[in-house]
Length: 355
Image 1 (cartoon, rainbow, N blue to C red):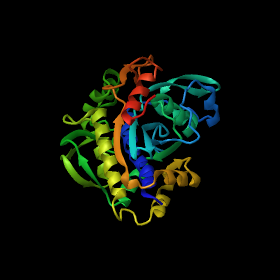
Image 2 (cartoon, one colour):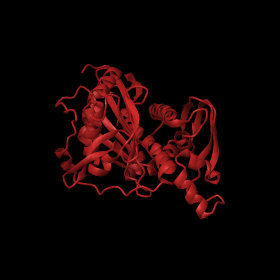
Image 3 (cartoon, rainbow, N blue to C red):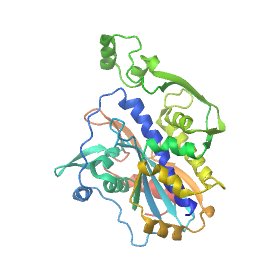
Image 4 (tube, helix red, strand yellow):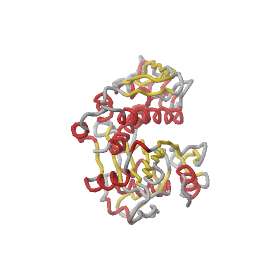
């Protein structure tokens, strides 16, 4: 088994960390409607997504990596981390493209109905097939395969590896890191006071009123070995004055990706790949089978010759932050809702192809 396949599959495990971040920071204190029941995957073809057709002989392979919280979390099927891995055998290049969970897109809702939803609902509504179609529509690339990873496997995988060395980009403190199990603590306030806070404040302002729900974490810039628990803190942190917000969190997630890649490509990182993935099989869902593996490995060749790079879809390049009619914070293309050509052009430029 070539290590590049291991890298491809294991990269997906980091996604569960950012899923956990969303669930702990948002779902723990906000009432969220139950996700709609999944509909048959083939029904996704009846809706107005425009995925890029997959060529018979692809020049490059595109794998969609999804991270979700799992059955033990509210809204656990929402894929709150989404990443496209492009493997280009001709250019000897792997590119990681981060797709924000809040992108606003038309999706099927069941019973032949459709409506605008955040893209992280696609997996709930139509499984991996609909998720591939939705992301393909946004980025303008043919998505051949999907790997969905549950949160439970992430910490376990890091610890099995003996930890991962991560190059921390910025020294930072976070005094509002959530403590598991204390999400609903009143911190000495009466039920009436809690109700008033929840109805008059929003977002981080609510968090500030309940200090007992949080702890202080600190990271120094530079390389350091992290175990699974530390990695979760590193990528989940959102409220640092020095390195806070979603963009900074994405930077830390990419730093983790590179550390995980190096760990897996290092000599002796895994003596036997198959037992490793057998331990994690309960949390990985994919449409990659043995025939696909053989075809990809044949096309890839010598994985040591490949370069790795990352790119993100953000407000700084192709997206605009706005609010939906029902008050949700959403991201739409700068050209307008459902107008994806600008994003397609940006992605094409980043990966070195022409439209």
